[in-house]
Image 1: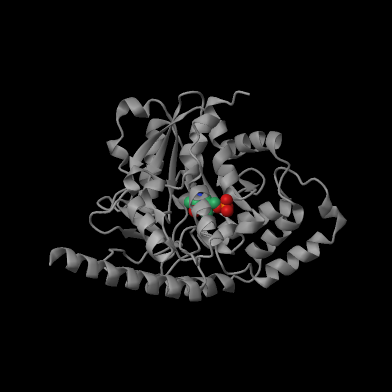
Image 2: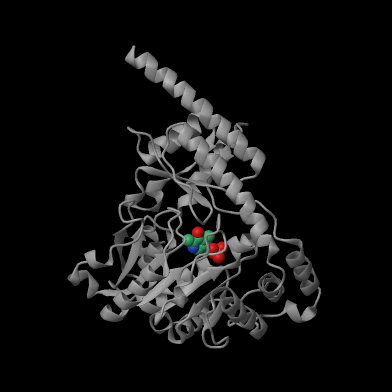
Length: 397
Ligand SMILES: *Cc1c(COP(=O)(O)O)cnc(C)c1O
C-alpha cells in the first residue's frame, strides 16, 4: 500500500503527542495536572441542553440535515451578529453553519488553494490554517507574531514576490495562543491590504465572547469593505461551552460562503438538527452564562498570572481568550521546559514551538481547568521553583 505524499508529510496534530504522554503517565498511576488543551471544563448551560433533549425526541430531526443548516439557525446567527456587532448579514447568502469552525477552516483551503499557491499564516497560530493549506497542495508563508509588534502581523514586510502567489490571508483575534487582541483600525488595514493585492481574508474569531475586565472585541465584519474581501469564522464552542457538540459558523462574503457550501455539500451531510436547535437556543436565549463563565476564567487568569510572575516567568494578563502565554525561563527551550515540568512535577503546559517557530521561548497555559486542579497545579509550580532555586544555589556555592 502506498499512501499519498500529503499524508506522509503531514505533521501529527499538536495535542495527539501531548495526550499520549499524559495517558502514559496516568497509566503508571501518576497524577497529572494538565494546562494543555483549550476545552472548557464548565458544562453547557442547562437551557441549551434542555432544548437539545427536546429536539432529539422529534423524528423530524432524525433524518439527513441540509448542508446549509436550518433557515432558523442561519437567521439566529444573522440576528446575533446584528445585536452583538451591529453587522447586517443576509441569512441565506452570507451565513453558513459549520460542524465546528475547525471543519470550515480546514475546508475553505479547497476553495482557494491550488497546487503551490500560498496562504499567509500567522506564526505562532492555531495549526489548522497551515495544515489545511498544505493538504490542499499549497504552501503557507509565515507572518511572525512577536511581542515587539503586539502579536500583529507586519503586512508591509511581506515580499512582493511572495504576494504574487498569495490567495488567502489568515488572521485570528482575540488570538490563540498569544492572547493578543486587535482593534478596528488593524482590521481596516487588513481590508485595504487585501484589496490592494487581490486576496481573500479569513478571520478566525472564536474568542470574541471570552473577555475580561471591560474589554469588548470588535468583529472583522465591522471594518468597512470586509464583506467584499473576506469572511469571519466563529463558534459556539468557546462562547457557550459547546466544544463537544461541534457547531460553529462562517459569515461574510457571499461568493466565499457559496464556494465553501459547494465543497461541503459534496463532503458532509450537515449538522445533526437537534444540535442546530440547541445552537438557536444558545444564540437567542439568555446570554447571562457568558458573563458567569468569564468571571470564572478571569479569576483563574489572575491566579495563574500571579503565580507565574512570582516564580519568575513573565506573563501578562490577556484581555480575552482562554490562554496565558508565558515566557520560559532563561536557558530552556519551550520543549525542554514543558518536558521538565511534566517529568518533575506532573504539570502539562503546551510548548510554544508547537504553534510555530516564533512560539519558541513561550509556553501556553489554558484556563479551562477546574479550580481545584488549577490550585494544585499552581502549588506544584511554586514547589518547582523552590527546588530549582535550591539547585541554583548549590551550583553557585
Ligand atoms: C478552539 C478554536 C477553534 C475551533 O473551534 P471549533 O468551533 O470547536 O472547531 C478555531 N480556531 C481557534 C483559534 C480555536 O482556538
